[in-house]
Amino acid sequence: MSSLLDRIVGFFEWCWRFFTAQSITGSKYDPYRRSRVRWTFRIIIMIIVFIILFWLITLFWATGWVRGYSLAYPQSVIAPTELSQSGETTNITSGRVDVQSCGRSELVHMTSHLTNEMIVTNGWIPSMPQYKTGLLFITDWEKTPFFDNKASFQLGILQSVRRTTIELVDSLGRIRGTSGEDSDLESARGNLNFDQRTWYINPFDPQRQTFSPSSSTGFYKEAVKSLDRFNQKLATYDEKDGRCGALFDTRADNLRQLLVRISSHLGGVVDQLSKRSQGERYDPRLDEFVAGEGNNAGWFDFQADNYFYEASGVMYAYHGLLQAARVDFADVIEKRDLDDIWDLMETHIAEAAALSPVIVSNGKEDGVLFPDHLSALSENMLRSRSNMVEIRDILTQ
Image 1 (tube, rainbow, N blue to C red):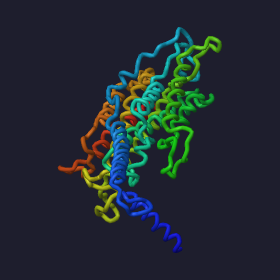
Image 2: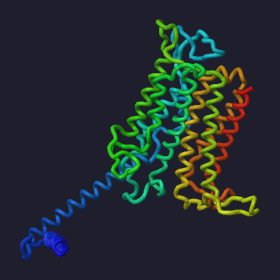
Image 3: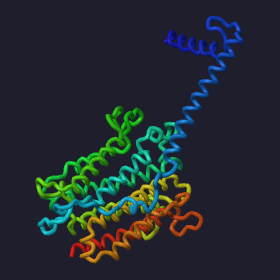
């Protein structure tokens, strides 16, 4: 034990002599050595400062704003479908294939576009090393007021495209569930469901493999390729088989099922927002107000912006996805006279996606200094959800 202690003491003595410019074997003062040590210290400090600045600047540049953000984006993505000269329609009605022209699905194209925008145009923040390590390895950025809004927004978009691809595989990409699943759609669904926080190396993340063959970004890029391949097949007429290269079943019951999935998703998101903004709740058994699951901390709830921007990303994605679905299901919407209620639904979705406060506040609903932005967003989401429920009821008839 004493030998180990002597070695530790000896090591610190050596460090002291070195950094005070004394010789290693003696105590003679060496001014030249002292100057060299000072410059070595300065260079080391400069390198450390440069690394820290580079680390933070790249993080700030990546998370500062959403590239290409615009609520007018559906108009630039949705275009008239290019049709082949002949073939079978991708629309299946009453078990019979009508002879029309093949064309791409705007819903599939919008799903591909949104995925590409969040991983290529903007860079996927949740798996970025600078973001994963948090604030000086002490706490996650989600628990601070900084650098987390864009990541939350991207996670909201990811939630929406994941649910859309599930519906594409289960219903829209095959005939009444009797045909096999399309391999490209199945691949897209699997890749989009890959963990969103995985990078190539994850040494400080015990929930994930230390070394991964690919990052989240790599899997999502493959999903984009799969979606594009499916649309290429869908728009191609196979003269040998006498039909389109893929199927896209645009029956009324499939539209209804798509809206069921989306409305269920919105219900879950609204529930999260409501719980976070509920500082107190009424207990009917006690006949009094008791503490709720959330808080009314106003601007001092540093995680309220995570909830807000994740929900905002969800609505931003559905703003485009449902406009794309409207093109694919144009015949159903026209026959069921859904144009007016669909317009109203799109209006409420856009109003929810347009909310963008400078600072997200989680105060009381009747607060003056500290507004409740979470409740304001929830209200618009519930309006659009009620429109979806009404459309579902009409499609059921």
